[in-house]
Length: 255
Image (cartoon, rainbow, N blue to C red; front, side):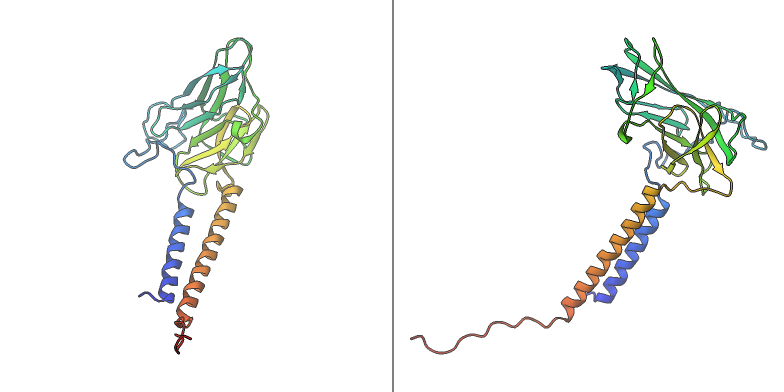
């Protein structure tokens, strides 16, 4: 029979292994990022100085979203590399189409970084322009909550950490967007604006672990620790408690 000390040690090891796996594993594993399907080398529009690899040109991502009651149905566009270098998901009801439109076209087009460049870091990989168009007029984002916000994923050229963060260019300046690491070299952000997006390696490094993920990690570790302490205490008490005595039988004859 395993004693309480041995059991507590085994539980501590299990908690340590689980915590380590949680720290090093990605938050979300994309469906295309699996064993036996290694990523192709990153495809640049213009290769950085000193990089002499020969690769095909990067591809664009496109998707057509039907319109119902004036708003879009769900749409997913991803580029043709393995794994895709850009992926854009637009949830239903995120876009307002012009009157009479029956569908809208989603595109994500790669280009080389051009001035003005971010002042807080260096763009890694390509710049991607996310656009939605329809006959008859402009298409606007109307989603007002997280469930109706388009999501962008981009693959970085390497999985080196700390990883890059998303930044959006509005025509005048670059602005950071909250970024999570969604795979070994894949990063994700909520895009409340379309237009120009890029991954930027911040000066002095950066973190791709969002505040929500960090809070969940801390809470999970605390819960595991509390459960472990409760289990150890209960086992120790059950082993130290005296055995229950059987009720004494009454003696004497019935009257």
